[in-house]
Image 1 (cartoon, helix red, strand yellow):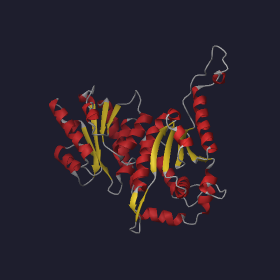
Image 2 (cartoon, helix red, strand yellow):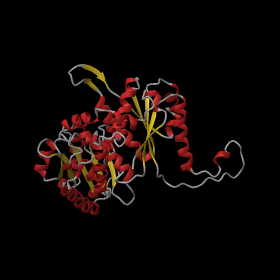
Image 3 (cartoon, helix red, strand yellow):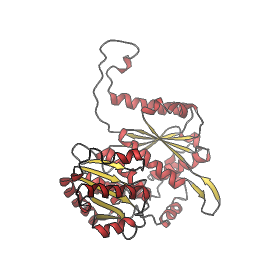
Amino acid sequence: MIRLLYENIFKIADTDGCTPAEMADQYPKIPQFLENIHAQNQGFYSDEVLKNTKQQEEIMTFAKNAREKFTHIVLIGIGGSALGPFVLQDIFESEHTPQMRIIDNLDPYVISRMFENLPLSTTLFLVITKSGGTTETIAPYFLVLQELRANGLDPKHHIVAITDQNSGFLRSEVCKYGYASFPIPENVGGRFSVLTPVGLVPGALLGMDISSLLQGAEEMRSLFFSEDGKQNIPFQIATLQYLLFQKRKTQQVLYSYAQPLLRCGDWIRQLTAESTGKKWNNHGEKIYTGITPIVASGVTDHHSQNQLYMEGPNDKFIFFLTLLQTKQTPILTIPEKDTRIDFLQGKSIAEIFKSEQKACADALSENNRPHITLEFPNLSEKT
């Protein structure tokens, strides 16, 4: 199970010695908050998304057939149409899966290399846009059309559209050219869409067990809507963020201590920025509020950002993302005794890496900088 770990947070957040779990459990408004969340009619956690077995079977059948025909995948999307798939790619792509290239920027340098060393005859293009008319997605789509036709290939056999079921430019292209397509439910916002075909189709193409992914999402939904504060990890995190925001901790550092989770930081960055950055409150008053998310990589950024976090403005909330089960690494053997590096003798790279993360957390505590750790047991579809 995913665990939330905290150490020095209580004094800084003024929790009167209560842990976030105890504090959330005592909080009388959890049922009201949950009612307000349901009232927003967000569909990303609905049964239509999490328990759509018919769609799951269609996607798995499509992916199985596609993996037999295609060696490469090019995914064209931006924002929520790319950030979730980026995370899945970093974790699940291997030498045994089709190689995926994600185009999420109109930068001419990126676009100019879109077809570089790409075997077009065995390449599948996933075009993903909720609205169906996102400029940054539709412009590269037309380049794909041009390139396929110039090489005598039928776009219908190489393009898959993932978009709104009923409207938008891309949906009209599906009707015109007969592309295979998968729908994004109307009440699922783009940044929340990874559990729809936006994430399930590329995930299945990478050999993921998408039913296990959705099972894990169901379990987290149960925690998310628990009125028991000791169980509700999202509510604990939100409570801490709120209390620290009142203490002018307006920046959130997403510090990934597992390379495959680095993109997870990028993804949470979008969710945090777009969900909290607001000009107006619910009463129509101008408030200009929001949490500024920052992405950092452990241990790389020990040598680029840490000094700022330790000694700079005390306006940051450090959010470590860690992995309990890591890759096994060899034990170091130091051939000659040297007191300057003897501490490395008999240690594995994994041990050194974990020690550096603990040292970073300890140093933050010593400098009165608030931090929590979200620990993943492993990198599986379910977790």
